[in-house]
Image (cartoon, rainbow, N blue to C red; front, side, top):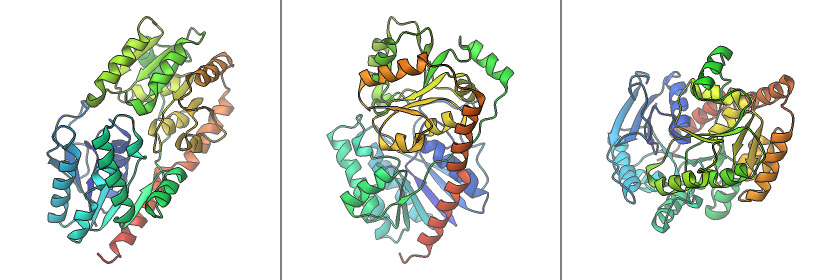
Length: 378
């Protein structure tokens, strides 16, 4: 089966949640006999990988680079050209990621394409988009709900949204995670090189965009009484540089707050392993890969109480009222003052997330969807 994948920025890459998810799905399904055509967007990745973007891909995976001009027309034009290419290459399934790219599903259906849509969140609610962007994203959501052969979502909240707004019975799936391979000596060496010590910092690991809620965390942390640091690890988004400057201004004058920028392995695993607490104060999510990774590393986790976070954390972490800086401050101070957890508590959290969010389960369900869609009439 040949699958065309549209909607990501660049594969392979860890620059965003979609890229992480698509990369793992492609890697695993290519080992099961699937062929993939990845329609990467033109331009440089938000972060530069140390290896060639294509040298780590299996032989059954091909990359096509599609023009993607600057916003606001970049994603619609990219999705149009990628869809035409996927139809030309006779892909058995066209696999769309994100609401913006999904607006081209009706075009694919017009010419007989079989379409699977994967929505990684309610994109039209993300703060970085203006009026035109939100309109485009709503068109994509509508197309995913009404025109795709199958629509995949990452939470019950998103499933309810798609049913009530578009009359679509979406299929709930999930992202996966893996138990990190941690070398204590290497972890200590990496943390020392970054000026950190194990248990001596609170960790935020995500892109620096408004919906991730860092503008709540910085003032909340500044109001806390602690000698620990706040470590902010994540890449900048060129579309949100004004927001990035605001974050720097907010953090100015507090030497405890450290911006590390984008980090790759093994530094990512080391940062999770050494964190006293992981915090994700987001306003909008699909299913945060960083939250799954933090839990797989055994971190204590404090997250906003949006359903997409609360469903993942369950009773194995802590929440605060999303958008409420005062409540975040109180919860953060409580956890900073509390004693560190024992190994048994960390192991319980790791075992639970590894049993509930396995890549094998996620990919097997996706394979079922592909087969069902291929059996449908065009």
